[in-house]
Length: 310
Image 1 (cartoon, helix red, strand yellow):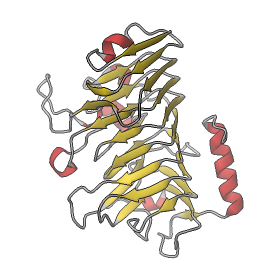
Image 2: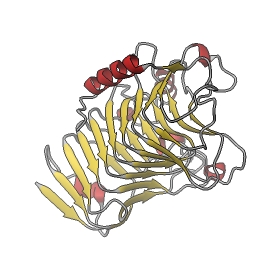
Image 3: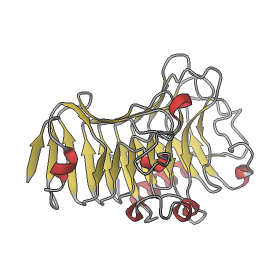
Image 4: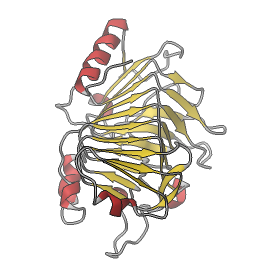
């Protein structure tokens, strides 16, 4: 069954009516709501990518109803806890920008398995997109603080296809097996001159053979951004690969950062295969793939997340 609503209606209230296989269609408009999707096997479709907007403004320093700071993992605009959820043709934003004032501000937080987001905009500044699960140490730390359903720690597979993802610091982070296919990854002008920016901050565990794959993505920047790193490991064994991506001059020639004050250059797994960029200054601990290695990683990752390139 399809449910169709406009921005005068509540997404959360409508979600209570949905059952397996149902679709929620959102007409153009701004839905000022903090949305929780805890049911599985549903579709959420917007009328248009730019004009169907789910928006909220929770941020790290905001004092919540329990008189605690919001914390990164309660700032989300949309939380996905159900499995087999598909989202397409809409915008999810957290308007807590710039990050030097508001701190971490998640737009989309995904804990569900077999999640797909297609032809959409995901927009914030710091920590825009969290791809769960949480690292084990944070699952322990946040007992009694976060909802038990948000502390499952289950491995998830996530697909992001033809999306525009905006942010400045660690704006794609977490421990999912996540494929970013033909996405525009856009480093925003954060008004923090000459400071570093980081696209991804993976937190995968040692036993995870793979983590993130950015495949055929366009890495762009607003304004005169520079000194942007492809990634840094949020936990010791963070894992990410950039294959056949187009990169602007805003990317730091070193490519990756070990996370200052750590020795994660000895443990993190970062991979790259790029033809149109000078890689001679890349960090020595980065794995620069040859053609055969690139194809093997890509094929195994596509199989892992059940993706078939058209």
